[in-house]
Length: 144
Length: 161
Image (cartoon, rainbow over the protein chains, first blue to last red):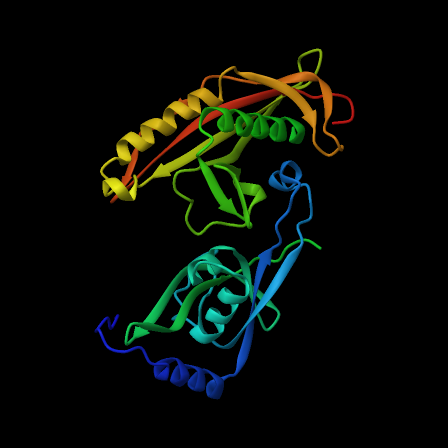
C-alpha cells in the first residue's frame, strides 16, 4: 500500500528498513548487467560473448515464497533490497530510475546462485520508497 | 541453418530501419532498431511492447534435392498498448501499423545469405528465401493487443554448414 500523503519527505523509513535488513541478514546481492557493445550485428545474434558488470546492492534479504509444487516448476523467491542502496547505484550509473536499473539487469546473484527477475515491486512511506521487492526464480544451469 | 537465421534477422532489421526508423528499443544499454531475436537476449518475464520479437520454432530438412534444403519456422511476435498521449485508445491503430511493418519487412521474400561468424560478414553462394507471413488472430489481454506472424524460412545448406 502506498502512502502518498503530502508531508515533508524524511529518511526515517529508509533508515529503519536498512537497519532491519542489516540486522536480519546483512547479505549482499549482485545485479549482473551487460556492458554496451558497439558490434551490434554480432552481439544481436548471440555471436559475441558480451562483457558483464556486476553491481552490488546491500543490505538485502532473500526469502523463499510459499512452495507450490508443480511438475517442472521452479521455486520462487523474494528479494528485499534497501532503497538507499538502489538509489546509490541509480545515481552512480547515471540512470533515470530504479526501474531502468532492474530492466537492464540480466540476472541477480545471491550467495553464488543466479536468479531471474520476474517482477519488481516497492514499498513507500511518506511518499518515498524505502524497500524494493524483486520476485525471482532460479536460473537454470548454463553450459561452461 | 544458423547463417540463414542470422541473415533473415539482419535483413528484417535493415528493412525496419528504412520503413520506420523511430521504432527503437533500449536493450543492453544500447538503442537499437525495434526488433530482436528472443534466443539471443536475456529471458523476458514479459515481452516488450511495440517491438518485434523473432522466435524460432520448428525445423525440417529435405534431402531429396541436389542440395539439402532446410526450412525453419519463424514466429514474429508483437504487441502494443497504444500510446500515452491517446490514453491507449490508439492500440488498434498501433497494432495495424505493426502489421503493415511486418509485411514491409518481409517483402521481397529473399535476402543474400551471409556468414556472420566472419569479420566482415562473408557472402555465401545462395539466398535465404521465405513465404508470405501467416497472421494469427489478435489476442486481447485487458489493455494489450498482441499478434504474431509465422513465416517458413528456407535455405540451401552450403559446404561447411
